[in-house]
Image (cartoon, rainbow, N blue to C red; front, side, top):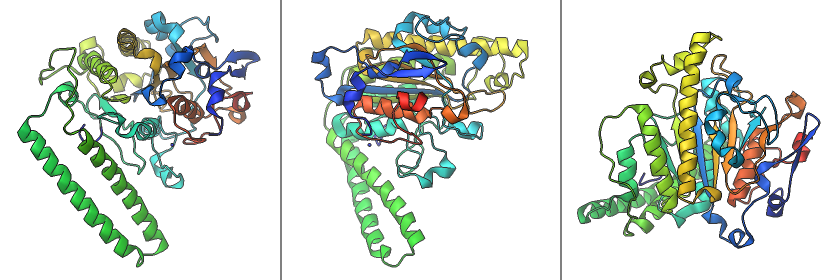
Length: 423
């Protein structure tokens, strides 16, 4: 989270129908024809919201992907748990960014770029949530909120390639969102922010004096360092701007700080994320589901162990119980956002950087895009042939443009999600 807890196609392209020429069938691309009224379209783009949800171990592909495409697809065993919302999301097949490395490759789900190759890209392995957060800036108390179970999935990365760990205690998230600081705490926070600003000033001055004495390689390292310093400065400015502004009232009772069963925390986190969006405390949020959370409450074996099922019927049966539970909770979250009347202005990115946990494959990732007032198309099947494959980063770029970010690239994108990439 932040200190207290970036056009190939013009935006007009987002308002007309796109078609995918896949398997000989013309399919309308979901996200680029908004159902919003003209009055709503006049709203500031910053009022749009982005939520990203990532599960480290993915979902068993045999039960996840539908066998048919289009709006009238026959739902799968896993997707049936959110079938009540099927008009409000699109599921994609055959998307990835060509990553390898199994668990390591999962970390590139929202960036399309591995940590080991990040230095070769202008924004390193920065993730879409952080690009969106930079676009929001100081308009909200928290440019972004990162939450998750345990230590998360290494889902979120800054412009300087630094991982953002999730807040894994609902009580701490509730406190950051809704609990007013007393006078003593405010004074302490103000002193701490002032001290940090002084330290950054000194560091920047020393770096400037040192730059002329460095080799080209060392100057590059120094530039990376200064980029990190600038990021911290931005966060300090945001924190200072919001320090004396009162926090919104909570629509739920205070969350007690107590020991919890990890699975039981998921709906509470979703409640808090919905409230954060509804109160405009943030417009960007992520939720991370790790590979090591306990599953005893579902009376099944180790989640990580079940992911290595080797097609064992017993393990697959237990794995489906976990997959169904996680998908059911996702459906709960979609419902909560609809109740809060933020769903039509929120793009929800959902999925995993793991395509098949049993073989550690990072190809053919489970990907869903929901909400946002988009013209959703059910099941979109992208080309499976290597020479025709569409980078997942193309979808992320289009999502960012929907959000209002004026950029013509993201990660390993070859353009926006358009017929040129999939024809």
